[in-house]
Image (cartoon, rainbow, N blue to C red):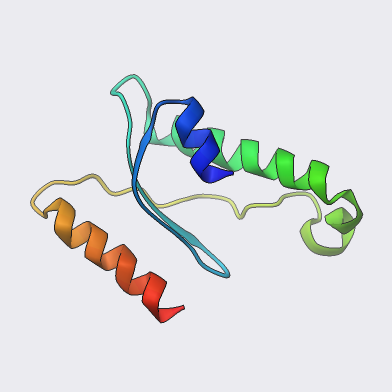
Length: 95
């Protein structure tokens, strides 16, 4: 679902790691998108779809929200794409 959301919005995923309790996403988007718009779109869209697919689990597992509040965004500055990709791949191999 995250990949689809990025595809329809023309965001390029460099790395994606979905863990049990968090997601690492290294993505590129046009300057017209703010990080909060991207995360709200991803979190809102995936939450809506999962709730549609599994309505019976709503009260048991999710209560009022599917995703936790907040997110962490870091921009690429002095580090290289390779360093970021290796960091995410390391998390993939540890889970």
